[in-house]
Every structure is written in structure tokens, then in C-alpha cells.
Length: 328
Image (cartoon, rainbow, N blue to C red; front, top):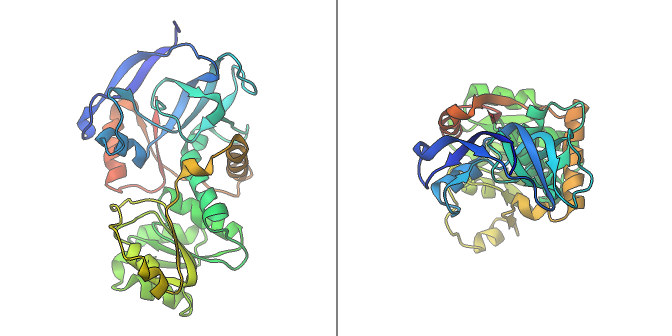
């Protein structure tokens, strides 16, 4: 039995935000390959919502949260590379929204001294997502023209910076003048307020001199999918990495032919952390860029566990910019 006890955010049943409860939980001692971490901050993500609602079915009750950072308090048998007192972060690990969490050592990465633990928690899931999008889903290089939807959002802000850092040109979309200004400040070359235009694809094409973009990074889904397809140059790629506005309904594959031999992919983070080496590569590049100041991470809100329902209401209502954190 472990003496590490503290509040945890529990999903008591599948449903709305009213099923969330803060309960005292005692963390078991770490088993083989496991690490017990005292959590400094946990990320607030849409995957948490899908799990809570039962869209991704899992037995209840369970401790919420999938991403976080903190300090190692104990390691289990066979764990190498981590010791008590180490600062660590992880992009995917259920039970993160708690004072103490047990995580597999295989999913933890070290946090550089120059990176605050709250910032590390804020950048793991979205930072590694943005990294695989620009390195693997469609490799961005000098002169690549990329459409980035929701450019003031968590992944969007990181994508704008990463595309620019790799020599690419960013055509950003954002909703409203304030979010458009955020995208511009991060280095977007062209910014389109999608609320102020009738034909989004036409605006994107105009921004590229009629050519269209090489790649469209679309985490919005249903509301932007058609415009994303119509914004591509011949043989361009649509990377549909999320569905913040809802899932894209089935569509006629022949549209890829008619649009100019287009490519469409629907990737997810887990498949891009397939090995320990891949996780370490992506995490070291992302956290290294945060450490040297070349990648800015915006934290849009910090909430105690007791205010978790408010945090998720703000996330689902798209009322914030940047990353939301729960602080156990």
C-alpha cells in the first residue's frame, strides 16, 4: 500500500460535465515498468471529453486526464532511466488529472531544466501532434505552403510556428479579429478570418496566387473539410487530424481524382509514437525548442480540480486561446 494520497478528478459515469467528481484517491505502489509521479499539471483535451461521454467506451468510474507533467516519487521494478526527483512529462496516459498518477515508464520523457513543468504539461499532446503533422503526415520544407485551420488554437499555434521554422509559408484561418491577430503575431504569412468571408477556399487560393496549398492541416473537421479539399493544389495533401466541429461524413473518393489526384490521410498521435525512439525524438525536438525559446507555448487557463467542469466547458465552447491546464 502506498502512502501517496490526494484528490483526483473522477468520471463517475458516462455523461456530461456533471458526472465529474473530485475524490481522495490513494495511489498504489508502482509495479514492474511503472513510475509513480506527483502531478504538477494535467492537460485539458478533447479526448477527455470523448472518454467521459462514452464516445470512446471505457468502464467507469475512472480517473480523468491523459497528459501531464510532474516529479517522480517512486519507480517500479525494472525501470531504467528514471529516478526519484526526476522531472518528467507524458503525452498519453489515463489518470493524469490527479495528485499522484501511475504511468508506464515507456511513455515518460525527461523535461529539460529550462522548461517549467506546467509548460511541459501544456505542450506534450499538442506539441507532439504538431511535430508528426509537419514531419510525417506531410513533410514541410523550404517553400512548402500550408493551410492551418484554427491557427489560434492549441495545435494551431504550434503548427504555425513549426511550419515557419521549417521554411514553410502559412495561410492561417481563425475566427474573429482577436484570434486572427494571434495567428499573425506567431508568424502566419496570410490570415483569413473565416467568419468574415463567404468562400473560404477562394480566399485561400487568392492568398497563394491561385495555385492552392501543398498541404491543409485540418483539426476542425466537418465545417472545414470541403474548403480544405478545394484549397489544395493538384497532388496536394489534406491531413484531417481532428473533428472539433464534428466528424466528416462519408464522401465520394472520386472527389480526390477530380480535385487533382489529391491525397487524404486521417492520422492519430498514437501511431506516431510507435517506438521508444520515436517518442524520444519527437519529445526532445519539441521540448528542446521550448527550452531554447524558439517555440512559444500559450497557456490559456489554469484551473484547480474542483473547477474542472468549468475548464471543460471553456474547452468545448472554444472560449479560450492556448492550452488549458488542471492543477492538482
